[in-house]
Image (cartoon, rainbow over all chains, first blue to last red):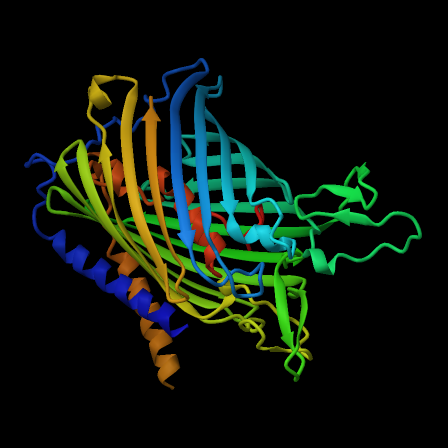
Length: 437
Length: 73
């Protein structure tokens, strides 16, 4: 909590300094500013189209690869090599209804394909499949009343991959302050997931039968010992997540704006993953092989603040801090700073750095360190004590004539980041985003 | 005692800072409405946030995932 108070104090100091800065005449209309924003009248005249029109199309593609030596599948030891190729298309449609309310429909379609070296060891022989595809479409409808400064919307999601299915829905609303310099938003969200109970091969319950033995591989193929293939019937277990997310944003002055964010999250159901092994210490040289066991409920409380400042005429400081705590004993701090330097009003270079640290969950211990008497146990290093550093650079180009002279391509972003954890996990991610209008 | 003092100071400074906000006219907002000034994640960051939620114990308060919806916690 002390860190939260210190954050508030820091925020307050920034606000006071900024308030004093306003005693000098603002140069905003006197000097050419490196901004790509085109001023609008603010009277709602931008809501001119009545018919349904495509407002924006965004396509983001990323390639991510990592390596490490603490896989949860093999009990906290073994390769963590992962490659992931993710692609997402977002489409935004707008129209103005007869009541002069602006309506927006956002449609998203995302596909990830990954290969994970440790997945091979769900089967002890290392013969399980290592690849997988996840498909996750989304839908959102929002209606805005520009006169009142309010908005209301509904959203729906689906996510499907071989061993995990999820459906979700949300309800969100926002209201602006009377002077339109502040905005409060709230979102209530629920995810209803099903975890397929794929166990490590040596821990699959043996069927009691006098006939041919039934064998289920980690890739879900089930066959009998006589070679006959049978339809897999692997049971699932539910996992539910409920979130209430709140935020308040405020324009402090013509260069500074802040947002305070907070989520209240509760989860229940099967919160472990069934193919994560744990090797329990029995007191002798032999270790007992079992699957991860975590409590069936978890409460999370993250609170964050964003502060963005336009420094001079061509530098933008984008900062973020988050404090996180949960009922499993994980406490974490995240701090992020990005400096966007506008080389021209339409081209910017943005180096960034993100620092993260967390304490270990109560239920974490490394390979072979959990005593057999523990009620809950995991050797997933996601719950270990560690710090991480993530740094890289981004480029954004958004010329008024369109990128490469193509009017339809409004902006192009390229970003690269390198991530290291004190657990020796390291990864790289490169992303490219195209914005069409 | 020290805890109470820090709490009081934090609340006091928060109250003062809110009162220091300047009421802005539309024409004074051109810097704030620059796309780089948006109080949101960049669109191109979407997949970075996904991998962080898989590899780290903390999530949320960033307009992103808070748990559920995928095999991550």
